[in-house]
Amino acid sequence: MTTANDALVLDAAAQDLLFREARTANTFTDEPVSDEQIQAVYELVKFAPTAFNQQPLRVVLVRSPEARERLVNQLADGNKAKTAAAPLVAILAVDNEFHEELPTQFPAFPAAKDIFFSERPVREGSARLNGALQVGYFILGVRAAGLAAGPMTGFDAQGVEKEFFADGDHSVLAVVNIGKPGADAWYPRSPRLAYDEVVTTV
Ligand SMILES: Cc1cc2nc3c(=O)[nH]c(=O)nc-3n(C[C@H](O)[C@H](O)[C@H](O)COP(=O)(O)O)c2cc1C
Image 1 (tube, helix red, strand yellow):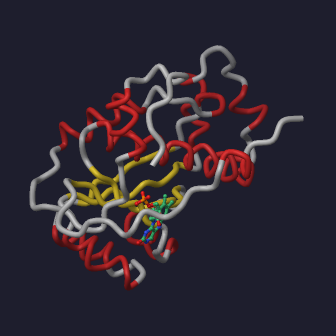
Image 2 (tube, rainbow, N blue to C red):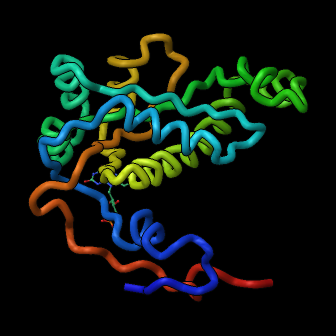
């Protein structure tokens, strides 16, 4: 494991909490995750950037047993048991009609709504990119709250959309289990690509 680097201004404990010691959890304790905790996560990560400040992410907290069962039915087999048992599960989707909010959310250039986003396929592509960024921000926010996230893309997206987004205007990007890590929560840490394998300079 790498150690804290003096080039970073974020304190070492926060670096560990968000990155070095944070892991993808596969089991959780029974400790509940409150709406207040998720609101605190959102109030933090909402400031992270998206193109034109478009903020396409929409979050559905799956709390009722009935809704949990409907979601679990759409998951890949390997994701079912841990999702059924997690204290909280969030469906992270994007609103492909995000452009309706642009005049208020990007007041510096309200015409962007019509100039750049009048066509649905363009909106879907932009929402997918920017929503994926927001999924990453959300995972880091969960970690900032002292919780562990278990993000998953192993599910039938059309099935989840049919169950939870009947309006046809949303695309699901990820399902995230959230809670305090339980027993044997982690798989072995996988390696990471080295700096020189990832970064080039031209
Ligand atoms: C977008 C995304 C989708 C993932 N989908 C699944 C999944 O469907 N099932 C699963 O068990 N793990 C899934 N994972 C977990 C990854 O395998 C895990 O985060 C990665 O190996 C890093 O693990 P670590 O945080 O413990 O180092 C997913 C992670 C991400 C970020």
